[in-house]
Image 1 (spheres, rainbow, N blue to C red):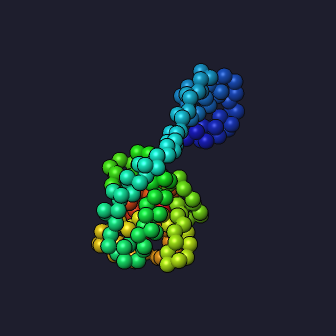
Image 2 (image 1 turned 90 degrees about the vertical axis):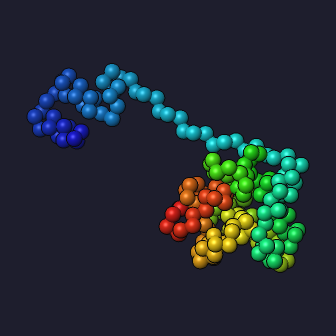
Image 3 (image 1 turned 90 degrees about the horizontal axis):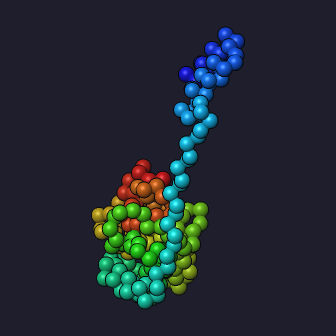
Length: 182
């Protein structure tokens, strides 16, 4: 409609005040006529990373240990599990918990990342290798039905999140359908 009006003004060769007023009235902002523009809404700020004290990291690791699925204990050493959980506690903000926390928002990973998203280096069977944080979380904590579903996803693909936040590692945000996240 705005483009049609411009074309109409040009066609009729209208000039002067009327055409300028009408063009401003038809602009994106109704305040343009008076030369005022509404201030853009500020983008929500990214929450600041607040590091968890080491004592609290260890308390959280002990709590998470009680929820580690037996399949993880069959494959990973106690040291590897401890190291993963410690890195997890150190690389999320103070009040966040991707495993047991309330599902009231994303848990943002502040550690290493690559093109596929949050990564963590773990020693598995004597070899250090980077792994997807959400894949390791699912392996360690997902129930059997959820894990069986996630096992059908391509092994080299990063899990999508239903929240669509690339750095979210909340366990409940993992998309259980390949078509969900992105």
